[in-house]
Image 1 (cartoon, rainbow, N blue to C red):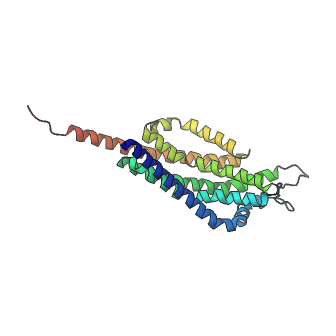
Image 2 (tube, helix red, strand yellow):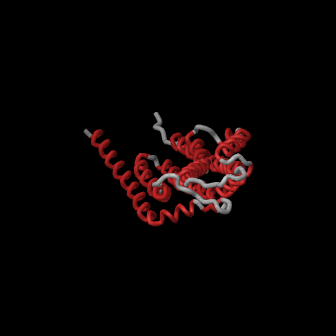
Image 3 (tube, rainbow, N blue to C red):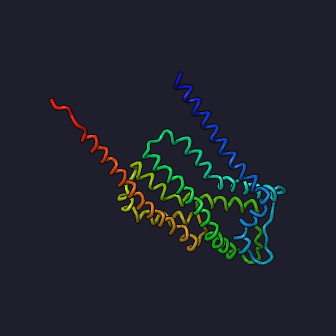
Length: 257
């Protein structure tokens, strides 16, 4: 009887935490919805600033002028509420973790959130202006650039997500080193392959020009190096904790016959 009741109590707690996370997103959404048009105008600035004179964005669907800002506000509300969402996830899984695991997971949740935000900011302030400038410069002569607002929103959201995930490289490396999937020494030996890999990823995620590709590849390479250094520290700490536990187990007094 105890196991089913315990399972039901976990489900009830999970439901309550999901509802709290959704409530946080809803509250942020209600606060931002009034500024939906302004938020979309701010999002479109990198493209509008590079468009030729006389060009403007268009809406090919009747409901696009309403749905595009609405979708942007909803996604932005989730991004802003991510700390609350992760806190609810932490509150649900923390009771089942050991003390050393709690010390490990909490900083990773905070750092992963900040890195995701940093990736989005990097995409907006650095990549977007250069990418849109490139796209507009290669347009055939006589072609008037008029980007659909829904297509633009889908494009930038994909890039936001791609850069946000790409900036999670240090967290991924730390987790792999902590769980024993790999070691910092093995990662250092694979550095040449990593360098080639980040430039390939940069080529796939950015416009086909060297500047944009390099702007994504170099931060990914730097984040890889940072992840290896921090992973070494965590691996060393985990090894020291393991040695201390072994020393304590061997130093226990034994009964003499």
